Image (cartoon, rainbow, N blue to C red):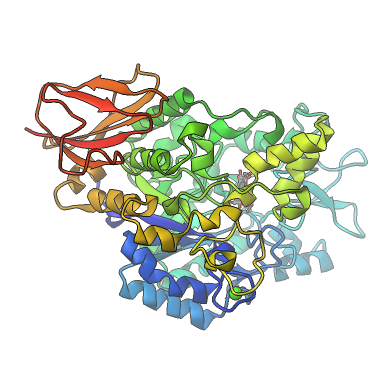
Length: 565
Ligand code: TEU
Ligand code: CA
């Protein structure tokens, strides 16, 4: 595998609305991000992906862009953005923008022009299609519920939206539209951003015949993913995107791809693939229910482990994926992937050790580094997210009580990850001096950056140590580029693996997700403890490890060992 600058980095996702409010209006902003660059640097972050900051009506929190060339006034000005870029560069931090090009906002000039002239040039920037049999052109359900087709007023046409009706899909069969997008992408790269996180990109290829498929729900519709999965040829579009927009600047790209065919992995992230990397969503896919959040089951440790291991083994022969335990679309990792008895600092450190030391590019999501948890809301009114409102409705329609429907949102809402970052135990968690746009998790008095900075044993310090270990001169070769080799796979409570460099250096990582103490017998060698979340075994000692290689791990214990030659 050819080595790239970004392989050795640690990335961090900022959800700007909830990160840090610089002017007291209750909404996070660019000034707020600039203020925290030193904090990120100190943590060991090299790449920052910022969720959309473009001008937007915020129907889907900025994933509905009304002007790709403007900064949303809620977040600041273009001058502030330039300042952010410069300040980040000074600290050796690269900025990655969010690229939302499957759709734009219905307030975008293109769509407004299309509505004004539904048979004109701009209508062809979108999918304006004739209805069939007195109804919509096809029976697809949008990601946010209801038909993907919305009538174009004053015509017998419908326009396509795979997401909300305020997010019309852009027509990638239109060369002119594509050139406008490519030019926009180059404009941002010219400014000095390192690259993009690419939103929902697999959806850009449509079957122009929009065939119906058998319904898969009581609404008589079928998930639009069906068409996305069936249609051929997305690769050609992605290649064109890469060659015309990213390659001239050697941009770093990390794609959000669901519904990829297995055999396409190489084409997507292999040598000369469409993208630098993609998120590994294999674990996330375990969290969904068949019909919605209401019928989703808690993730079982055994399944999660199996999934992560399979993905690691598959990818290492092909490329380098981006590893996450949470993002702005998912509930908090600590609340999702840990058994209840492990949702505490010790268990969260265990999860961190396993996640950060996997092969791949770690992406932390804001607040993960202090172990932020899901935030239960008291009623559906307290939620802001469009997806949550749809899932609540879906649950009720499926016969759930209001309490059950709310319960599903409490477990799976995207707002779980969108509550304001907890900076301190001051009012509103130090996020704002005003009234925050979304409720602050009441646990901020216990879980916040300021307190954790003062506590050497905190989750935050543990993350710092993990990151530092990964980057250290002595272990980087093994922990970044080394192979992933699973160990003790048959033990149903243990997640353990080696990272193995080409030169034969080995680091062993073991975590006991079980409730009971575990004893593992390692090959008879000498070992050095590099890191542990076990307070009784200070770093550099061998106190949990006997001379005969017997390793004792308490419940939620995690240890990183170097195997001596
Ligand atoms: O998400 C794309 C996507 O596939 C979503 O359906 C995702 O599975 C869903 O949010 C899970 O509940 C991206 C963005 O990450 C998301 O925030 C946007 O809402 C969406 O695109 C539309 O731009
Ligand atoms: Ca603000």
